[in-house]
Picture 1 (cartoon, rainbow, N blue to C red):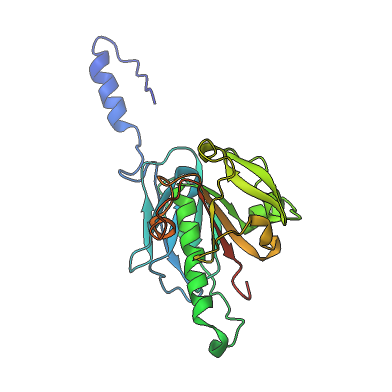
Picture 2: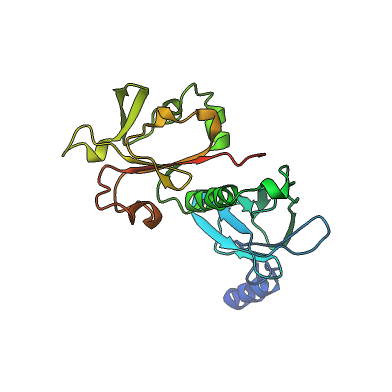
Length: 249
């Protein structure tokens, strides 16, 4: 911002005086978003994943529920808030010096506690990890909201027009192949994982689309997360991980 002062002869000195007198933003808060995440009673919530998907940035709240993103540009930014046991939130907040307070509602437990199996608990953890990887942006991701917005009849419909993939006809519908891995072997089947478990010889259209919480795609070994590649000697055909909707969600 330029300041102009009409001070004759000693204009340089006059300009400096005017600049010092001009109100400045609070130091350290310009281009930042800071705040506290709390529950409905006002108690701070630690270990909340807070992400800026557009910038591939992810942090967690501290023990006092506090968080801070620095070095931000623009007037507003969209933040996502997730933690097991609480309903996820997405908010667009101003990039300014003021602190924000975000309230997260507890996620009601629809199932009886005795009916919550170890598989369901692992699934919830896996789904949260899916959203963490999506924020960091190492692959291609589709959330439940994005899937529903496409009104798909089959899972392959969700992936149409996705760069780097092609479709082949299979007995159950369409199969997905990564274009970047098709040079060595044209019908190179990617490994499909469902809820963290390998599903050999399965195609995406074998999975009911209405049961899906999220899909993540990795075109080669260099981008595939370790949990999907450590059991595989060769992942050059790519990897597709599908996560089911958590019961009651």
